[in-house]
Structures are given as C-alpha cells and as structure tokens.
Image (cartoon, rainbow, N blue to C red):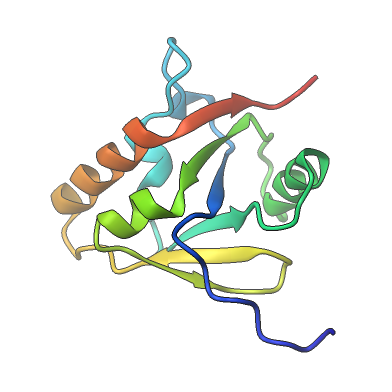
Amino acid sequence: MSGDAPTPVDSTEQLARFVFFHRYVRADGMVRADAFIPHPYSDLSVTRHLALTEDEIWEMGKSARGNREVVLQGRADISAQVVISQSLVITPDEPPRNHAVITGWPPDKPAQKIKAQLLSVAARYLPKPG
C-alpha cells in the first residue's frame, strides 16, 4: 500500500552505510570512523536491509550517490542495536525506499568521533561486488 508510513526501525534490523571514498576503508578492510561522521549534516544517511535482496541493497547504494561525482566503494553493515546502544536514534526517512537517518549526535566533533569509532568497530565492511 503506497502512501503508508514506513515501519519504525527495529533494534534487530541491519543497516547499510554506503561508502564512496576509498580513504574511509583501512588496508585491513575495516571501515574507518570517518564513514560514520555526520558531516556536514546533523544526521547520517543509512539504508535498511528490510525486505531487500543483496542485489537491491547494492542498487540502492549506486543510486545513493545522487548527482555527486563519486564511485561506490562498498558498504558498512551494522546492527541497529549497536546504533541505539550509542544513544543515537534511527528514523525512517523515505523516499527512497528503506532510507533512514541516524540522529541524536552530540554537537561537538570529538564526541561525534568517539561514537563513530564505536560504530565503525562494530560494522562489517563489504566491498562493492565485481
């Protein structure tokens, strides 16, 4: 039923943070904290895995770049529970389908960096297929 409000994000859901910059990935394949810093905005864009196939998640990543001249490098998958445990809030923000934002970030950059580091340690980086 189109027009229905998206369902609230459950703590058991998986989220994808698309990575467009190679510098956000360490040589050992771990994602850097910078991939989770909400700069220059006050929220951080993610995609919910909810009812999506792997191919659909990757397609969403390709379209997430918008008009920017960047290339999708991969994605950092993270549990919503980890985000919530950092006193951050995940809010559905459609369209596009399954888009959500992470809000509740502290206003100062050092505190944001600490939260981003904790998220990055819990995330699993997946390079773009192909």
